[in-house]
Image (spheres, helix red, strand yellow):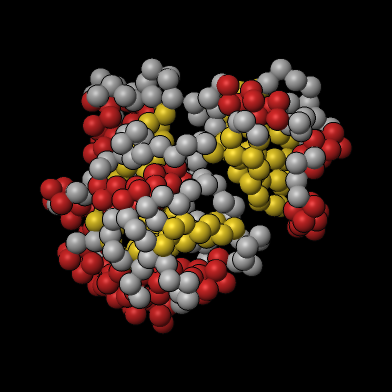
Length: 352
């Protein structure tokens, strides 16, 4: 058994989300959102490399030594899978391992709005799950994909870097491709996807202009495309999609994106008031005719008011959900204020 598995076991037993290993520092676990040191001597650069390289494929070691960064997935037998990132820092090597649950939880078990499961049943269009790093985007997407896998009879193709949740084929046929192992890039896999008869395409992350353009093309040609972006609200997500294109193309892109746009789910994880874990606050923007019209006209600043007046259509402003969680006692006021888009809504009336 690899020596590093002892740290994975500790992370797993404590219910943590991430293991941080860094030359010149002791190991640390992220527990309920906070980093906590393990009582262990600081690693030297050489000792940490030896520990890490024991579980690293040779091709990934070569990539790391050439570039200073590498991503891959590792499975600790009997524990869990881990999303792995190695990087160089001023004291030497560093690494972060994100634990991926062995079993995909349903949207209901995750406490997510029921609209998310419904979106997995759409025939075509684009659905985006967004939020900052560590906000649970991959977990939400996995739950949506699992719902489709159980309820539909289709071909699901995923393009990931790396593969995180492993989905066995149930009602659907699922083919999962990892960038770097099974395909050269997201864009190469997306070009190939259009010839592979998929009904649902999951793109792990829309990182650049070409990937976004190909994902939009797939959505326009009758596929359901699910993907993620690192943005903090539904409106900023739409801005990011449009602004990645050259200025002379943006008018055309607004029109094509509006035609295929189905939903943005923007989420953030917040500490529970009782310290028992974290809870997701979720913003939902649906692609109604009014929203699509605003996107075409480039009037994204008016979208928040449309969300407020169309809650009956399944829309949910982020601050409204945060308010709901605060009133339920799930989070405290300081946490609500910290994560709100409009913090003035959560000022304590008793504060001067």
